[in-house]
Image 1 (cartoon, rainbow, N blue to C red):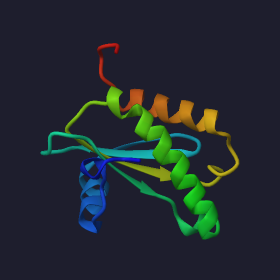
Image 2 (image 1 turned 90 degrees about the vertical axis):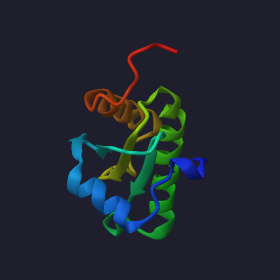
Image 3 (image 1 turned 180 degrees about the vertical axis):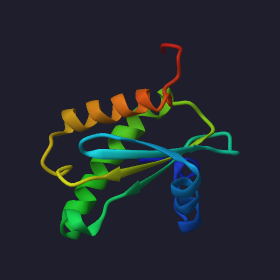
Image 4 (image 1 turned 90 degrees about the horizontal axis):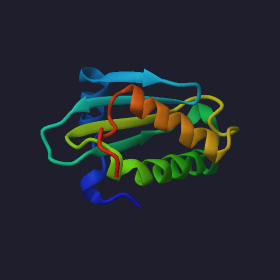
Length: 116
């Protein structure tokens, strides 16, 4: 589970990232990101009702949260990030989703250069 320090929760935080940030898009996921004034990275998740009922949206959100949780130590700090699920996100398997998010993070240059 993400720590409270690493979560975007408020509507105005999401609105700021959407308005002032950049984005990279993949087949199943879109990443919105913007530099932040805080010391740590903050992540929010958006899953629209178009994807299905609540149990399916929660399932997708849990998968995305787990993938990002594993990536946090390798990410640059001082960024706000929103992960948005697209149509078809529910049908792809965990490995595909993980690989796509990792490539989007590299494309957005949010990964640290040094190898851990």
